[in-house]
Length: 287
Image (cartoon, rainbow, N blue to C red; front, side):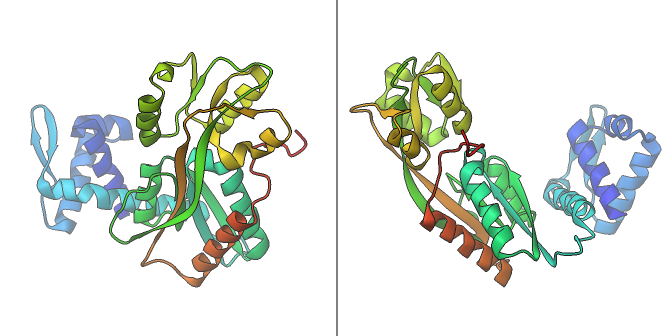
């Protein structure tokens, strides 16, 4: 199939040579060459320039990289998802950044399964750039991110606005724990709190940092909705006169691929945000 040719092409790109691709794919160099020749014949263009150091992409080859990736992703998705479960008529693909998986993504999936039981739901957690690429390639229907990139054809909708506030464990207020909320936050944080730029403990995942402070003590920045229940019960307290930072959440989806099922899923998400509830990021509600 053409997908095998695309995989071979991408392996040559990764390895930088026909020889390396042959070793990784457990094929002969002759087989690799034959696949490339077949691909070039079908596309009516040259994809590589071969030399002693390996293989270099032509301009047409560079342009084909994105198409090849899309072909492989689409084929792998089809193999994973087909045939559909007998009880389902359609699949919704949603994505979100790691710090949004609990509770927002979890609440969204629960709401979708209740409101749209005839739809399978596949969720994907990744960084913002990865989510946007999957959205553009059609591997995702919608994605939740903190810092959207504005690409042609992608609808960017402000879903909700939050603040990052500094809280501490009242029983053990130190040390300061740096929670990495992204590049924009790092710049603002370092400008406002230069003495906290090199913390003893740091995390790039909010729920993990929160659990650490609850168990071991310390102070750090977290989203207001997430820490509200801990403030209410006295497990955490606000740090007086600490700077606050805005932290909005955006919903991304394709303007060209927005069927009725996706519009219904988006309405479910808006309802989840509007009704609030427990946002404390506790995996076990009994904790």
